[in-house]
Image (cartoon, rainbow, N blue to C red; front, side):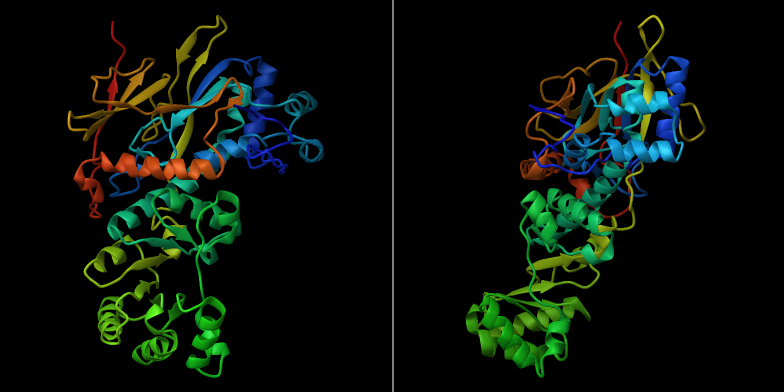
Length: 450
């Protein structure tokens, strides 16, 4: 177990504070709660999505490992406190509280990589109102972004089947978002990324060879291919659509021979071109040279290429932006808190179209005797009854302020990728359908007995 030490991240390396990755009103609420005497009421907050993006059948939890690692750095040092004082965001009483802040409560939730559905209790945060309240924006910013990417990436890897997907969306988003997007895509089944920082931080495989500019730099395509092969070996991937595809393939084979690793197609009718290139490669004796396709692919384009002789897909913009759903729509709501007598009471928002369900939640996946998921069952104030075939979903992440092992760093990425694979494998077969539809399993509440 790792203490959420103020000077180190979960990986043990010094990092900058994450405490101001938040909204101002988190701290002004804290000030008001300190004034009213309610700041230290024991509270339970819950992260959930009221609905999935329109037409989606399931979601995938992403970002938990990043969130837990960043929680270790959620501290208010001299720089942060100085800014808050200078800008008169909060009063001195609140600054004094923040100066000594560290999260001492409990965090439970769905394992990263797990499938989720409407109203799944994806994360539960227990602590005083003061320490749980100020985490809201930071929690949501990570989970909403990374879960959106993981959910989109899962649809892509499902459509791709056994063919690997390569994440290459770094240039289409913010530089830090690019790193987290690469991580989320790997969790959802992508084989590799073009982003080197993601490789450094999370130990994921990185790939990449050359762009069109490299070909255009040289006096001829032949000269460009010769230079690349000389530098990277014949097993490299050559980009063959800068000028004339058949001529480029011919040149590539002449120079690299049967050991040519792959050719990449980045434009035109990819289905037609892939078939033509496959036939040409085979005729030239390059039976083992692979075909990689790129060019604004998404899950629907990947599905359309299923019948084409394609070996791998490179996906950029769509995966890095959630393929039409750039946020998972998750919210962070207070669902239970203690009163002046110390007893817990359930609380819930009743606003039209934004109602929440009060009470501390527990969840399991109801499964048939054959292991096929049938429903998401949520117990309010108690653990749902397991008939022996079901699977509990809530995991311990932080207990009494101590980070539990295995949920951060490169280890967590591998763990989450396995969980995604196992979680989707137990869903009904309709989870693979890209057509708009209802969630593949319903969400059911199990009321307390007695």
